Length: 125
Image (cartoon, rainbow, N blue to C red; front, side):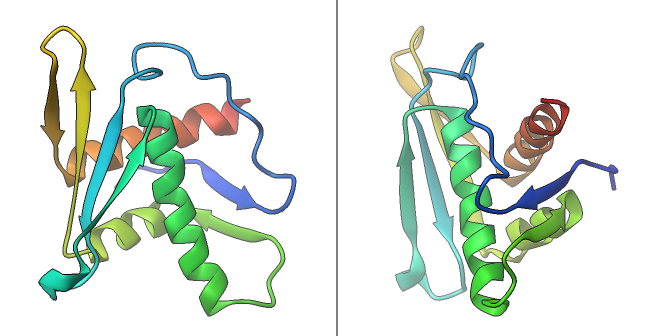
């Protein structure tokens, strides 16, 4: 497993990102099914890949805040986030490609790779 950036989450821990580059304006839909029960299927809609990655991190952060409601500042590593993603029955992304005028599908591994790159960029800021 890749060693990755450690994420610190608290009231002032997340800098406002400047959304630049190829991923910036690409409408993204995250499809997920948290459990084996098909009734848990849902989706999240985002204006960019980066916003979608922030949304996935936010899901994990809400989950650990529910488990640890008294902890003000959360700290977790990329492995923890990967375990959360791997614990979902299914997750995938549909990313709009302007040149094709269509959504391209991406799997769990792509999401994990993008999260690693995204959090690494955040850690370097």
